Length: 145
Image (cartoon, rainbow, N blue to C red):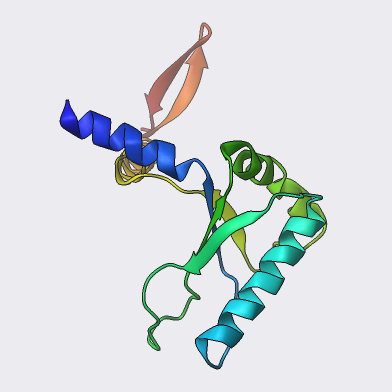
């Protein structure tokens, strides 16, 4: 019971957040990096027509020269509706070719990520072992022979 409450609390805290992957990191001291990240985030938000005010933003994980991908940026908004607005309109960025290098996603809990990984594994197994066919309106897995 306590685990479910903790999970629900964690999920409620994360609904105000979005994660942005793929934004290149600046070189220099932390103030320069923070300033450049803010400019890029402001550009993204303004291109969506959002007036949402960021409460905070920061890079997740420690800097590492061995990483071939830039660290994700976690952005926190004042309310859940601001984050949902950004997530709904992220397709608009694709139309403007602004999302070539990065992607936007919601901030999932560890349990949500593990559930999604289970679903991915199940789908891979279904694809490897057979295909889904709709027979009389209900999905069935038909194995290849």
